[in-house]
Amino acid sequence: QVQLVESGGGLVQPGGSLRLSCAASGSIFSTISMGWYRQAPGKQRELVATITSGGSTNYADSVKGRFTISRDNAKNTVYLQMNSLKPDDTAVYSCDADVWTLDGSTWWGWGQGTQVTVSS
Image (cartoon, rainbow, N blue to C red; front, side, top):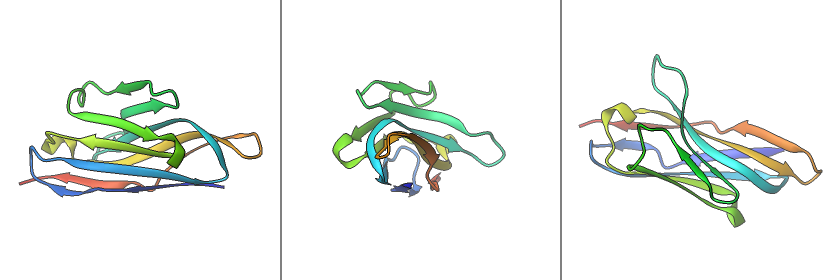
């Protein structure tokens, strides 16, 4: 019904930057909110940043000032610009989305995740 596909992960040196994208497709009328989460090996999944359809944002304290979440409502896509990356940012990054579908119901789900590795 609705699919989320992330892209943009990879290997980057400490201090470097990456931009993640997550595109929602399928029977979407509009997106309510979208967000990014991450899970490092041996750790629980944690919130990175979220953004509502109106543009209100929320960030984890650990990424404030370094990461920026944005969205393109017309494309049902959310982005995560990550600057000044640290080894502690290494994780699988996944997006989630809460959407209104064309049949008038809501849908919430996760993408498959993309690996971000920060290492020299």
